[in-house]
Image 1 (tube, rainbow, N blue to C red):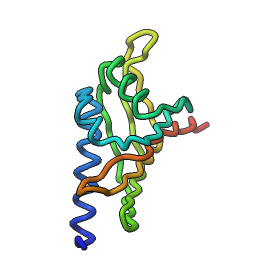
Image 2: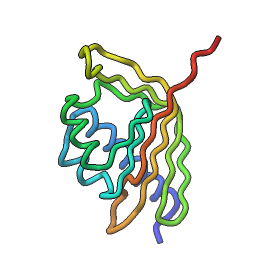
Image 3: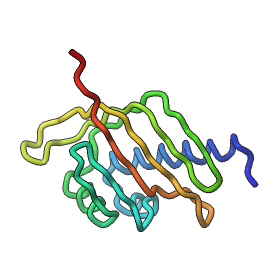
Length: 130
């Protein structure tokens, strides 16, 4: 069994690869990273399967940038949960303008066949503070 620090490093690397692939709209890399049974919940509550999410990323041309705050990584056996603040900068599908989505991101990875794959990703927008 791998050491906890090794597993954490693997998960950190998988998360960094997820961000890189989303920004680059690297569909082959995303296809490898995303589990076939992926559930992706957008900040708008729209839900995509793996096939739908890959098509969405390709259509939008990738993300402009992803900024992550400090993340919490919890590893239990073959599962890892990565949570923390995030800002996703994307292009509006309607106008093409840059939009900053400021919120809290959850990504659940499952380890199998020597690699980590994403089973669930979700972005919840922060409420404006009054």
